[in-house]
Length: 283
Ligand code: C2E
Ligand code: MG
Ligand code: MG
Ligand code: MG
Image (cartoon, rainbow, N blue to C red):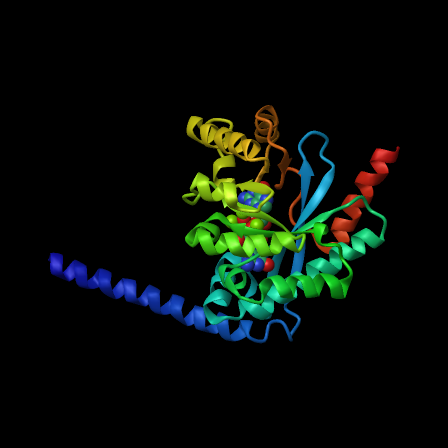
């Protein structure tokens, strides 16, 4: 009987695996042509100062609309892009798109907005990354201080010594870096101290239950004080409620990002969002 169940489980498991595999192959093949077919676009989520909610940044987030399958989540297609190497041309396109957008916002006379772009492990480790970023900035004419590169804690800590050298190189070129999904990895303080980053992004999993969960509170408080003692800013991701916002403000968190303020927006909607804010401040 046990054997029978085992066999059924095994069969069931392989069927699910086969389906995932087939979908992954389908998506990877489609992703090869997604850029040229104009199926990719970038949306921007406001990052605001916690004290007065003024916009200081925008995180660029990639979106893919597959003609038959509809919207595919980056959580599903980014790993496939990484495994297939497609993340290099796609990531370069995201970078150029976001840098061009930042330049347009500056040229429209808006208060400074720093555009944050997510970097995958493959991009970060690519030997030409620092040069590529500088080239794009120069081509577009964006001063480097308007760009921030987000690197997850897991990627940074995977090989901290080489990460340290790459960050140094980017820093020397005037490019800012932040550590994304902070708290989910195993950061060693001694490396964190050497990383040339200016912001820690507290992972949204710690924010969700922050109003009620004492452990999440403790982690968030620790990350904020650690950031400040290292001279870094702390930003909370995934802020959805006023309670979360209040708690983070009490703890001295510097910035917030999340649905409470805004979902990721098309460039046009983001422009309207800033325009409304600037107009309100002048009134
Ligand atoms: P991330 O960089 O940590 O981005 C934050 C994610 O949280 C985004 O999901 C965003 O839409 C979502 N989010 C923001 N505010 C809230 C909130 O209040 N509540 C909830 N529940 N979620 C919120 P998204 O856009 O689906 O992206 C998922 C992940 O995919 C990103 O996590 C990032 O790791 C990756 N990703 C997205 N775009 C790119 C890209 O251009 N390049 C690379 N390498 N990775 C990307
Ligand atoms: Mg991010
Ligand atoms: Mg994150
Ligand atoms: Mg994440």
